[in-house]
Image 1 (cartoon, rainbow over the protein chains, first blue to last red):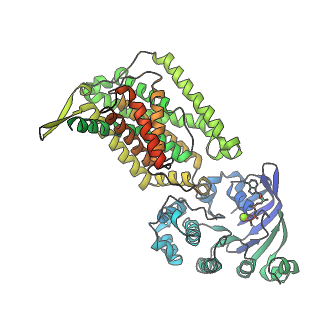
Image 2 (cartoon, rainbow over the protein chains, first blue to last red):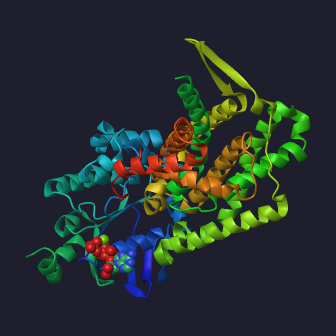
Image 3 (cartoon, rainbow over the protein chains, first blue to last red):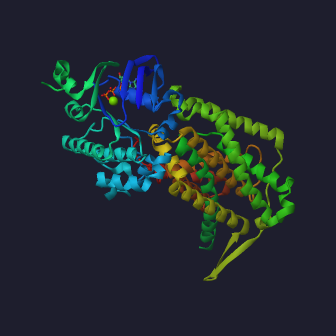
Length: 235
Length: 311
Ligand SMILES: Nc1ncnc2c1ncn2[C@@H]1O[C@H](COP(=O)(O)OP(=O)(O)OP(=O)(O)O)[C@@H](O)[C@H]1O
Ligand SMILES: [Mg+2]
């Protein structure tokens, strides 16, 4: 579904990604882990078109993504739940969800989607008329996830949904994501610092370090790898 | 007492039109974060477009002297919106929106120079094309009044043209706030203002949202200008007189608050008219800025502004 081949990208003369290749098949749950500054967020921004690549290619559902203008990419079925949540603070929860549903499929499935989102993340229903900017970090993260789901995406990209949250809140959000995935079968690409949890639930994982994929495999391979055990799992 | 009520009424009437004028600028600043120094000159252009639509294009013949001016003024709105659309497309979009990431100072320096340049071109171009003779869009209503009252043997007189100006302003303001708060387009404008990057992730074309806001802002201020022109004569440099009021209104309302800009403009209209009760007319503008500084001293974020930085 998503094929990234030899992707290089960075910020004005500062290379960050260096020949990164990643593959996500339809229905898969793929996790990307790696230390701070490895380029995980940069990779997501390049997929969404905010960062322009200097080399390599990305195709999505057979479409050359780099030829698609950034705001059009959501309409192809890519939902990006960004690092740091980035909800629209002066819009209400409901309006934030409506913004998620700007895509054609999101508009078409609005009623069904909103019911499911409220079922999965009931706090959004309770607070639907609250301004997003006044919500707690965990609530904003749930809103960011709900907003991503509201577009009826084919691929949900999540950038560190546990960032800056209390462990119990992060656990809760993680558990919700697993449940959403179990019920919907949605294809997911997750970037996570909570390596143990991420690798445990993912079908396939990539380790990104300093702009290179240093390791990839299914979760058993990765969890059995010495380097992963030492560096990320603390074993 | 009678003088007070009279000034209050006059202040509310002119305040509504100032409010509309400020909202045009507030919309542009609120959505795009671009300081448009040419906005007063877009308004000047709107005044002349209304003037020529009325006198030269046959609207006077078609609708007569009473209704005609208001038809022309309302048509100047879409005309300036189209003009603003193309100015944004050809010029402003190069130094704002998604292009700012690669520019020095997020494009603010370039925006400053560009909008000042547009202002100079419009002013001097206006002088060449329209000449320096004062123009106005007078209607018979401009010199007649409705009498309100008498209450307790006091009567208030409302200038008919100014009253209609205020009603038109309020009507447009109502439509605009419905557009901003209720419609998909309005919500996506606010989303693009809140967080352009996240808006792009939602599939919102931020540059197009900016273009929409810029066009709308120009159209709205053009109508406000036309309404002002039913009572105040104008010339190609009239924008300079109003642009200060516009900025004061936007700051008072709270930078970034679109509806707030209306109340900022309203406040300025009220202060201007009420100050005539105690101050000579020449000090009207001084009074406006004294009150402006006072309000900003106690409420630096303006009426509707938030102290928190946007995320
Ligand atoms: N807008 C930017 N301009 C310049 N450099 C940037 C920018 N954003 C990120 N970088 C740099 O690019 C590198 C990769 O950053 P990125 O945010 O992709 O890392 P990350 O893997 O997501 O890290 P984290 O786990 O901390 O979120 C870092 O060295 C960072 O300093
Ligand atoms: Mg990151």
